[in-house]
Length: 248
Ligand SMILES: Cc1cc2nc3c(=O)[nH]c(=O)nc-3n(C[C@H](O)[C@H](O)[C@H](O)COP(=O)(O)O)c2cc1C
Image (cartoon, rainbow, N blue to C red):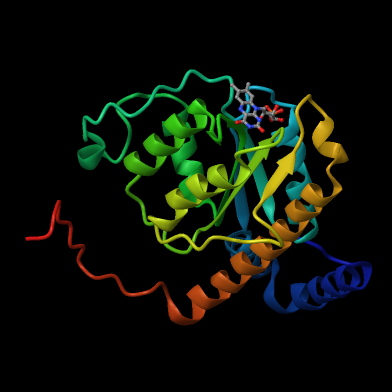
């Protein structure tokens, strides 16, 4: 149950009291269960990935600012710290094409089903040499390559955190994973980035943190709107994929 105010609660108690003698306990229990199932189906979830090896560093501060907004919006979140995991890059074996999972059985395969369940994905990375860090790049390449479930209309958002430079090149880099997957990209009031060097400094970047809040609000809106639209119209029709290595 998301939010129920006092009046709604009293109303629901009154309904139960009225219906029990009419329907009997079992029928009422079934109705309540169906209602719960529907509510569970209505639950929306955002998966948040932190690529920093500093779990409480500046990227974490940026992600937490978004998390607060998701909570206000009634959207569940789960944050996964990958920054200290030993994640090697893709080995181009293409076995995932047959199995739908990566042959390197690590955190990538653990996150995959959570990604499949999620309505949105937030990827937060510290900037290393004007790029997402190596751990994040290995993680994303393998996650997006190995998972074969349909990602269409899952909302994506990439955020980068740096001392000074490379925020927008990293932002572009992250967005490409979403764009190749039919995932709408949530945007905010600027190119999502937060400044900070030493742990905790991101808290001083008022504009950066406001960007995170705006982004999370816009992303929540998109997730809700897409959920409604999917119920009304279904997902867009898909053509059989044309895949050529070069034009001939
Ligand atoms: C290997 C390495 C490379 C970095 N490269 C950049 C860079 O290109 N531009 C920049 O502004 N900051 C750079 N930084 C600084 C980090 O992006 C910055 O400290 C950030 O706050 C780290 O986020 P975190 O606390 O979440 O780990 C680099 C840091 C490291 C360790």
